[in-house]
Amino acid sequence: KQEVTQIPAALSVPEGENLVLNCSFTDSAIYNLQWFRQDPGKGLTSLLLIQSSQREQTSGRLNASLDKSSGRSTLYIAASQPGDSATYLCAALDSNYQLIWGAGTKLIIKP
Amino acid sequence: DVKVTQSSRYLVKRTGEKVFLECVQDMDHENMFWYRQDPGLGLRLIYFSYDVKMKEKGDIPEGYSVSREKKERFSLILESASTNQTSMYLCASTEERGVYNEQFFGPGTRLTVL
Image (cartoon, rainbow over the protein chains, first blue to last red):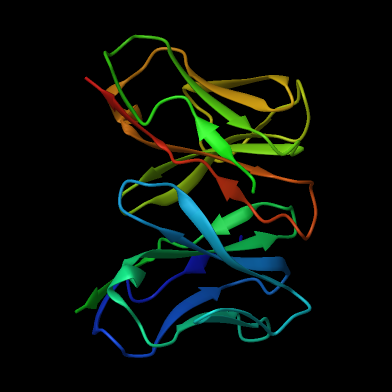
């Protein structure tokens, strides 16, 4: 059964730093992998979606990569800002078209 | 832009009450989902629907039922609310079943059962 893990559970970095959030999955038979952002008490906002045939996707200061063979995806945030503080979740679409979720990484950007 | 709305942001109910949570999407999406989100447990799928009047159980359907009478609306029903159903409930929709199904989420309903 597919499992998705995000480590660390929480991360605190100074403003301006580049940072990487990690997402690993146990079964490489996925259709896509999505990254979401969640602000406290709010719903989820889709950030990037990488199809299984792709290696990476970029949106502004965000870059997500996918390596199916190693079961890993990373979300790279360049020049972090306090407004980037949120919980970031990844989810893998498995062979049954079900999204399998990680528990999230809570990111705090210190001014 | 896709918009997914949920009927309430905050809801307080008493044990044993019947609770209705409503979700509406305005983009003619085929698929709709109900999740609950709890600290330390992440998102868990309760029910989903791929078509009108169609429903399938997710990972934790016990204590819940759903209704999808119209394509744009997906309702989650707690038949007899219990304190362990206190949670954040999130609704989502996607265009079609398949590899391009980016999920769009509503703002969530924080339900407290006393």
